[in-house]
Length: 212
Image (cartoon, rainbow, N blue to C red):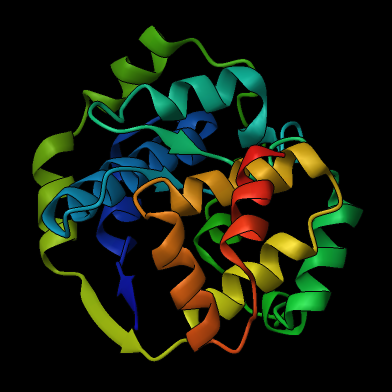
């Protein structure tokens, strides 16, 4: 079972538009996203966040911008399995997973509607926080997280994980992601979950994958 948490950012965007410098909109919104995600993760007993940024692909994914984004996450690591991939690698994986067609559906999301004309690509944290302090950051984040919706979907988890990991071309990235997936599981439990999903892997094969 997969639980999807849907969060409306409309009120936060309205407040940003009223009170903050437009050049910082994307950075501030991403800091809200990360803060809300951390709140939900703690509530659900999760111990890390996983995001899909690729370094330098857009203005908000420069090294400096990611540093500003991460600085608001206080109590857990942020994993980025796609960080070193280029766009074509990510699109190839997306096609093989069957997610690409959904990802290119034509609609305006919160990023396109509120994209500043001159986004900050080399932001300074103190200036970002100065803009952030124009709003009651904690109260807005708490309110938005509290009003989230939760959907539950059945998903063959082990097969999806193996399919996804198997399509990652870089061996180092593939093994790192696998370790992140299994870091709280024993080898026998991994073997059992894979077998339930119709994937026959011996304990030795799983150990070899983990130690590769």
